[in-house]
Image 1 (cartoon, rainbow, N blue to C red):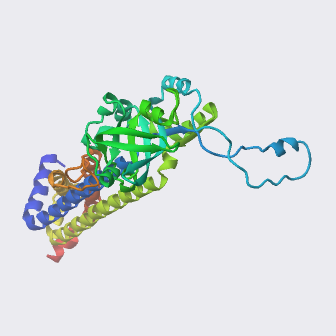
Image 2: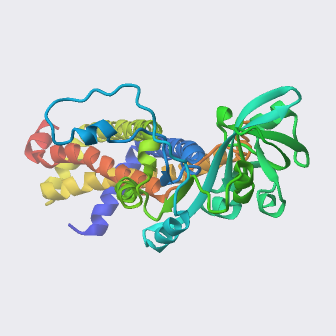
Image 3: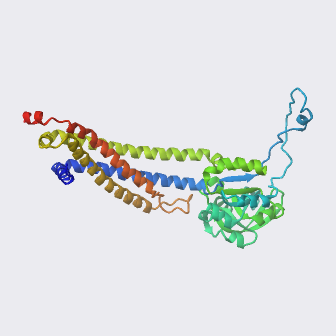
Length: 419
C-alpha cells in the first residue's frame, strides 16, 4: 500500500467523524495533562518533605554511645567453666562521649573516594535562662561553612546570616521556637547554663527554622570552638562526625564498615529515616497509579470510538478490500487513525500539563513552618513527560489494534451483498 494513499484514507475517515475524533483526542489530552500535573505536584511535595529531613541528615553519623560492656568481669572469670552467670543492674561503661583520635578519623574519611565531605560536631545539653525560668535546650557545635556546603544550612535561616556564626565570637543561631519563648532577636544577648552549672552569655546572630516545630523549640547552633568552650574541653573534642557520601545507596554497607574500622557507633540514613521513606514511596506509588488509570480510561474511550467507526464504515472497508486492499492494509489504516489521535492528544496533553504545573508553581504558599518556601512545590522532571508521551502512544496503539483486527477480517462480498 502506498503510504500517501494510506495517509489520505486515514485523514478522510478522521475528518468524516471529526466530532468523535475530537472527543477522543480531548480524552487523551486531559489524561496526559492530569498525569503530568499530578506527578509534578506530588513528587514536588515529596521532594520538599524529604528535604526537611534528608537535607539535614548525614548519610552516616559516627558517634560514641552510652552502653554497657559486651562482656562483664564475671563472664571473663568463668569463661572456660560450665554453668550460667546471671548479672543484674548492669551499669554503662564509664566512658566519655568523645570520639577519640577524631583528627585521624577525619583524615581517613576524606581520603575515601566514596565520601563527598564530612562535618564534625559537638553536642551538648544546656538550659536557656529566661528570668527565673530555665528552658531545656540542645546546642550543636558545627563548622558553619561545612554545614552549609553539605546540608544546605543557609536555606533554614529565617533571620540573620549563618556565616556570622564563624565571624562573631561567642555567638549562637537560635531555634525559632526557642527564640519566640525567649523573645529574642538577632543582636540580642542570651544566657545559657551548661549541665555542669556554668553560665555563658551568647550573642544571637541568626534564627534557625527547620520546619519541625518540636526541634526548633530546643535546638540551636554555635561554632565548634564555642561548644568546646561551653563544655570546658580542648579543640580536639568532637562528639560526632557527619559523613555525606557521593552515592547515598552505599550508606548501610559503609556504616557497618566504619563501625568495625573505627570502633564507634555508625547510624546510616536508611535506618534513621525508614518510616519517612516508606511514606514517600507510598505517595509516589499512588500518584503513578492514579495517572496511569486516567490514561487507561482514555484508551478505552478511543477503543469505543474506533469500534463505532468500524461499524459505521463497513461499506467503505468492503470497498477498500474489493479494490485490492489487504486485511493488513486495512489494519494499518485504523491503527494509523488511533496513533494520530494519541500523538495529537498526547502532545497537547504534555503542553497543558506543563502549563498547569507552571501555574501551580506560581500560586503563593506561605506557612510559618517553612519560611523559605514561597510557592507550591513542583517537580519538572523530564522523565514524567517521557513516560506520559510513551504511554499515550502505547495506550492508543492497543486501543486501535483490536478494532482494526476486526476490520481486517471483514468479508467484502457479504457486506456488498447486504447493501
